[in-house]
Image (cartoon, rainbow, N blue to C red; front, side, top):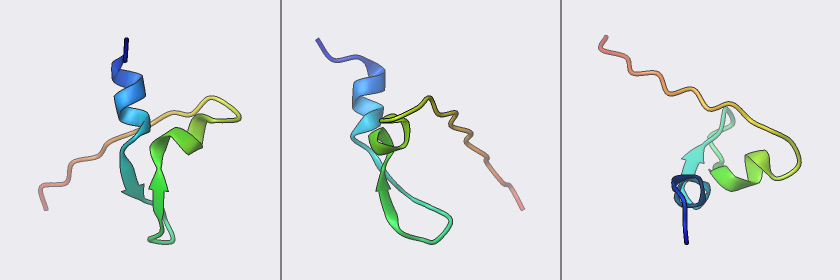
Length: 41
């Protein structure tokens, strides 16, 4: 059974260098904290 973390791990985002990164690779070796910021500017 998949969990939400499993689904999230498959998603891709852009890193600070604008390279595509699969989220699951960020917490492969150590814990990670994700922060989503919404800007209305």
